[in-house]
Image 1 (cartoon, rainbow, N blue to C red):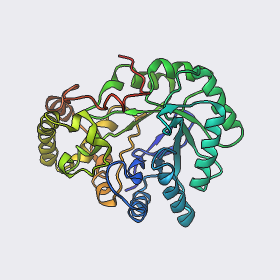
Image 2 (image 1 turned 180 degrees about the vertical axis):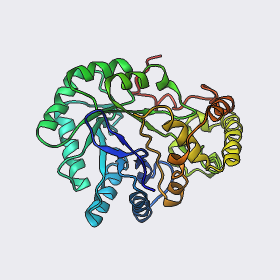
Image 3 (image 1 turned 90 degrees about the vertical axis):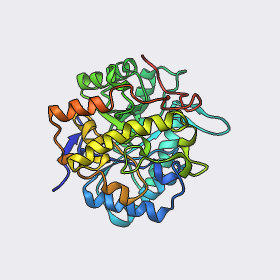
Image 4 (image 1 turned 60 degrees about the vertical axis):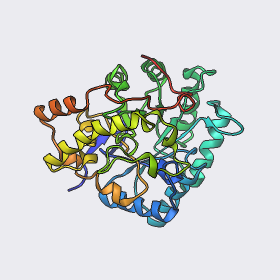
Length: 329
């Protein structure tokens, strides 16, 4: 059965209700190789997952290049989202100027083997530039045929409202899952009111909602999660015990843990399109039952008992990783 569709903003295309986050193709969560990434893309394509999310930052173009190679070789028809606005070297900063965004977008299109992308995000907001001016820049890109629509990432509801007043914002991408609930405090509702799609990234809690929770001792030395407070002790052990209860509940229902966690996200609103990430076709296969799960009131009550809002111990980012994220509560 094909995956059901959801609309990418009130004026956007219909895309698969579950997308594919392609950050893992760059090795952020452990070693990978392009052949494995290509196999993952093929599995997503075969499953009908036709909304792929990447960034110029992921492996400094590696993720985009893998996607571009796959699209060139296969002719697959997918909706692609990429991002710009973060500068890493010589030190991390944010640049939303027209010259920078244009140069980065042009390089992204080359790597993706595309004349345009359907969605282009400001990866992090540059606070030195009014968001209204940034949107004007993005509208230039749209008028030139380089993008179909724009999005924002890790922003506050107030930023979304200001941006949307200049030109409709198609999508907002913030972290959201059973263990990261901040968007419930205004952002999801603002997206609903404005007709903006809400794109939860890390809906599987960076691997914690797998059939086996990812363990710190198995992480590669370069794994991005190694310095995340939720993956360091004593927080990790506490979080794993809580999630093990949810895992048992999913098993009792005949669901994979990943499918259960994604079903919960999908149940939060029809404008939510989660983009779980993986670098392997095997892990992707664990998601595919999510759209067949229809939560009952009893299911929702039990999930809320097992994993109440705010259950997670530790912040989702280290202090360094939190730079550029807009805090609003």
